[in-house]
Length: 261
Image (cartoon, rainbow, N blue to C red):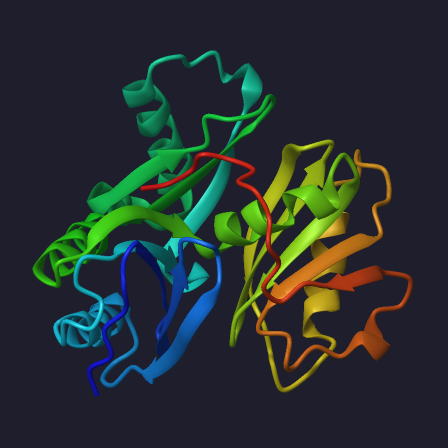
């Protein structure tokens, strides 16, 4: 069913292996329409992108701006140390790929890297398949959309939560169906970032993962503040123990960084 809206309009699109989520917002910030479309076919970015293409091809959104958020399934993260001494953007991207290569091997040759340019201290870096990024841009052009940004789910969540976290030391957990992105923030700076699989049939899975991450950071003071956003349907807060949890499924906010592909 076609439903045209008066412009200017911003379309938010979330790509994950299981679904494509679309939400339209007008220039006043009011949400006008939300949709969720299941992804058919083998799990992966190609099937998710095909589902997005099918929706934008209908022309309902033609002329709108679009911001695309990529599932943690499709993005890898690491921190570029502040003391790495690498200044140029090309050299920084090469160094980040070097960090990823130890875990992912030659697969990184087909990835594109983005690095947060805001703030101080360690820089958050992300990598995604270059084919996914190129074909996303092509699909948006074909649908008559103006692509404003493509960013990871972790960054999208941090952007929305930056005012609420403020200068606190806190963990951020971005949950999806069976994966999560974790970050430790300290006074607006990134201290640690990780990606982990979750057993969503066991609600305590997140807290087991967090305990493992804490053990990896023996030099860090204990931090029990935890902000959780994303798919919180399987979260068992009864298993949280001494974690101080704040649920923020879709928080509003201002950008905390400039990481975008």
